[in-house]
Amino acid sequence: MSLRAEIIDTGELYFFKAKLTINKSAQDIFDFIAQPKNHSLMDGSSMVKGVIAGPTKLFLGAKFGMRMEQGIPYVISNQVIEFKEGESIAWQHMLHNVWRYELKQVDEKMTEVTESWDARTARGLWLIKKRHPENWVPKAMAKSLVKLKEIVEA
Image (cartoon, rainbow, N blue to C red; front, side, top):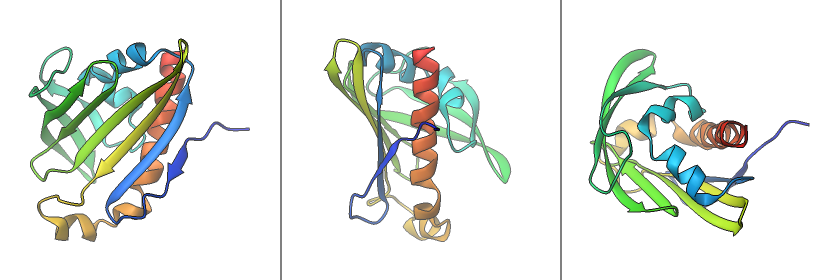
């Protein structure tokens, strides 16, 4: 049986969530996610290719650039807009799509991790709609959570 994350129906267009319980402390998981160098390792979309600029560990207001590829290679600049140590982290790029990880400690060695992608108030929504994110973003997030679990539990 393969491991799967739960895709959550938010009932809202352009707002997707997935969650998975990981056998690791919230702080350990947070520390992994807060390092941009790890984003390509846990990326379930296969779009994130690596970090090109930014701090070793993210913080509120931190900016970081990533090498990306979706048909063609490109670079994206992100800024951290939410940072609660060990609990949540969120960033957005110039179109204001928001990626958020929320960590809820179940017990000392188990954490429920929820990843969300929010484009409800994004700029250039016409471009986002054209890409039909409902067909692939939730699946990519679920894959990201499975990869995250495999890495941090190893």
